[in-house]
Length: 276
Image 1 (cartoon, rainbow, N blue to C red):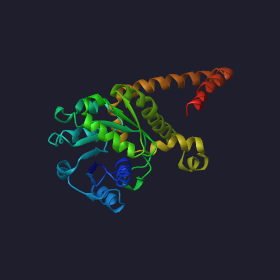
Image 2: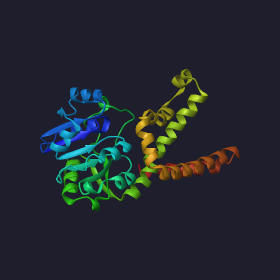
Image 3: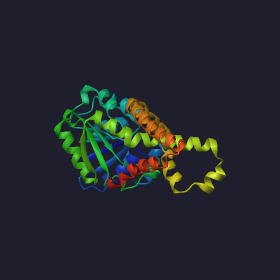
Image 4: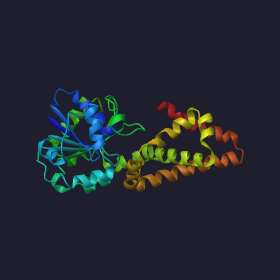
């Protein structure tokens, strides 16, 4: 099987390394608008070769879209003429808007998948082979995709060591808005508020594990995450409102010196240990 990857950053590059280890994959080809990314991916061995977008459409049995969510919507419009047996897999972090935008000509070819994996780093040099191994991948609205294409995607992602979960796109975007997207909002907010209050020297001297851990994801790609916030706006705003309510509860307990209530509130949060 000949697989193509559009977008050779962290996810696309890591996927390329995983695919190259599979016996059922004959070749992994890459394409990226950034020619530096293409060169890095080829030199790092993330893909076997670099081909044009048009060549990828003609020759690949599967095409993975490992690009920002707004770019996925644009690229899909240029895939309407692919063969009926070519499988397209998007790896974006949102799903409703992408699926609504999918051209009818390729809806049966199109499998919407979200690998719950990543780091704060980006680009081909951040890719590593085991990123996806053991991670959950959510496949959305699978009933609208052709059975042949779903089976093919499940086989490939399973070989990559991923745990497959099926979910409707509306539920997916709601849940990731809370569990994945909101933490990025909090991290960006924390870092920006800290930068306004502290100089770099104090941050360097005093930033222990708690701050570093929470601030880490603020290093993530702003273009990618602004696109995600845009596409999942309503769910994210609901999540922000819920978080602000909890923050206000905490603020009031501290202001009114309700230390016993504060301790109980913290104990409730600690119950997360039973889940994670």
